[in-house]
Image 1: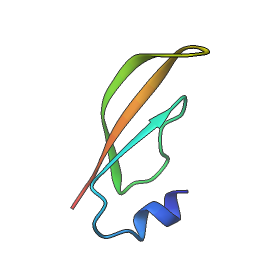
Image 2: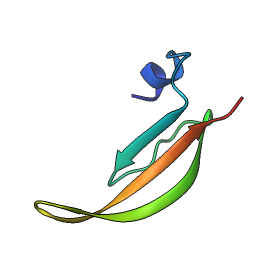
Image 3: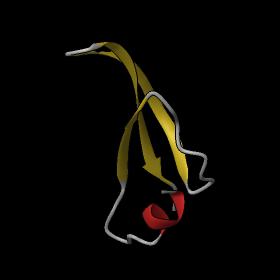
Image 4: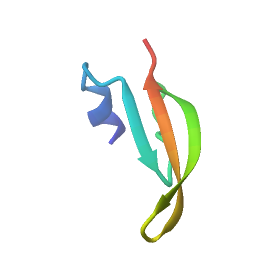
Length: 50
């Protein structure tokens, strides 16, 4: 996933659930609890570093 995200030049923000990205090109900026149909999960918002 990290390799594919790194190759997308127009992509600047990525939101994941349950796990953070392990890419040095994306910085974690926010973590929040989100209510899903099956329960509460963490959402992680990452921004691409220049």
